Every structure is written in C-alpha cells, then in structure tokens.
Length: 99
Image 1: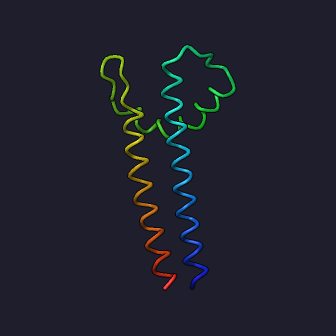
Image 2: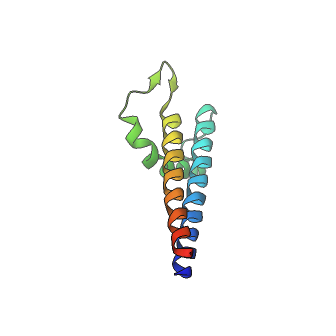
C-alpha cells in the first residue's frame, strides 16, 4: 500500500506543478495583452494556444467592464479552487494508503 500512497503523492505534486505553470502562462498572457506585440509571433501564438482552452468557458460570461476584461481573474480563481481541491484529495488519499 505504501507504493500507492507515494503514487498519489506524486500525482498531487504533478497537478500542483501543472497548475503553477498555467498560472504563470495566464499571467504572461495578461502582460502580453497590454504590450504592442506581434500576434503572429511563435511565443504569443503558444501562449494563446495554451491559455485559450482555460479562458474559453469564462468568455461566455459577460465579464467586461469597459475596456477591462475580468475573464483571466475568474480563470485564476477557478484554477486556484481546482488545484486546492484536487491536491487536497490526492494528498488525503496518499495519507490513507501510506498508513
């Protein structure tokens, strides 16, 4: 059972790491949107391709106040919630199987 506990702990670390990377990519996309950059540059296209699936569900909700788009803020909150719930469940499962 110890191996299964370690597997769950490693999975929790993986989920945590992926969410951290997504946080930083969302942050980079926000910063890029404020700067005059070429939208066809490879790095910008990569940021759009990675973060569009995260932002797409929230774009259906009208979250614009004037020129301010609050969609990334809602995406940050959702990622935070998903990360905390998923990592918490995986770590509690790891603790159960470790003992």
